[in-house]
Image 1 (cartoon, rainbow, N blue to C red):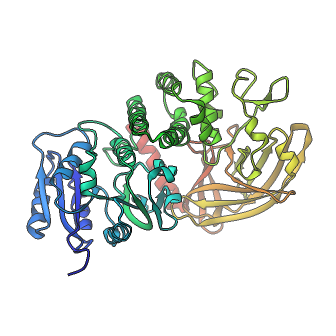
Image 2 (image 1 turned 120 degrees about the vertical axis):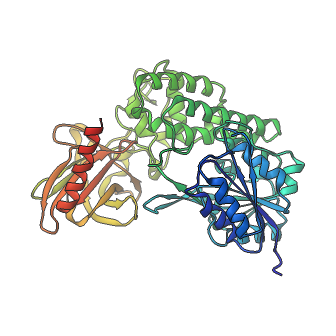
Image 3 (image 1 turned 90 degrees about the vertical axis):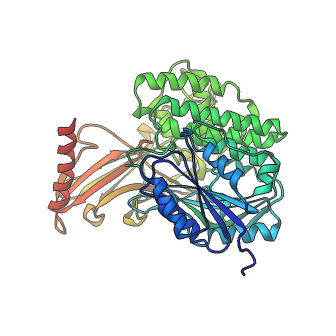
Length: 531
């Protein structure tokens, strides 16, 4: 018998997810003899899920099915049922619409055993479906094996709020009464993860991929993390973040609590700020009021820990009673951040957000290294029959850009799903002293791109030897950001649409050939008829 046989209980939770739950359970069973049991907790489904689970239990004796008589309204209660039912020394959690990749349990179990850790954590990847593109979650934590004697030794741990990419000692969870919030409580992971860190476990981190988080943006029922259109989602996020902070602070983990507040500014605040333009005026007003009230409890040390973009956004929100400067805030919330004009100063020369909000300082831009500065580049792409032209304009930033000496710009159009580079070019940046800008104009071979969505990425190079990787603001105006059909020697025709992403960056959709054009126009017609 293998040395780690029958050591792990995998708790799979699901509600009305018959389309995916079988794959989830089978991915847990496929982990091999290390899995003692797969506890499938069905939250009172009505779509046939219970029958599928019972069939799996007949197929493999390791499957135990627990069916709740009343739907709990959230993910926490069924997971708590799994904690209570687990019989193995270790346990993991798995959602019904996700999967465990091969070898995940063995990798975590071996690391936990080798180091005597109460918690072992590994890399989670977000897999976009149907494209299959994978984006790692918090990859900075999982670049190499690491032993963390106490969570306070690695405050970055507060950024990984997932419960599913970790293996837990069952007796550790029970001894410290670590459970999820019951009932309907969105972002229950925040609270559970804070309780884990507050208990001070010995943790081990492994670089292996141990969890695949499926992202289905076109699903009829969006996941909580994707369903952000209502103000109740933002309220739930702040509630969960506030509880996590209180848990860490109450346990004496002041440094972790402050790090959690800084993480809120850098992650949650920036993400929802990027999306404010998508919401209506009533949502924006309520969001602004709720956010101001929440941020008013943050202290100076918590602001100081946060990266500059989130800190500045927070200070603008606190300084203004009503929503304002949303387009500019959206660009600052981008990754990488872009600080667009105006570049105001106080009478003594201190950089500030604007003449109207001089109480929001920007003095950090005077000392930050060039590769981190939120430089702003405007981009205009004009698809034409004789070839597209991309015009770029780099703005001055309180003298820092001029001091570095703009030399050239490298640009790439990168396929959003596949990550491949479709076309690349380099151009000199030429000064325009009258407007405090530097410009470049580059031809773009649209036919070389092919079908799909393409993101523009830039590397600015300076005469002082420094560089800055960034994206570009999509300029709107007459003839810009409009769909057009252009001839192509390779494809006959191309349907091309430059557009602004949620963060205001320039991107490009391309559909080659008559079939591609017909398909896109057909979808547009169907949307119009539906409307």
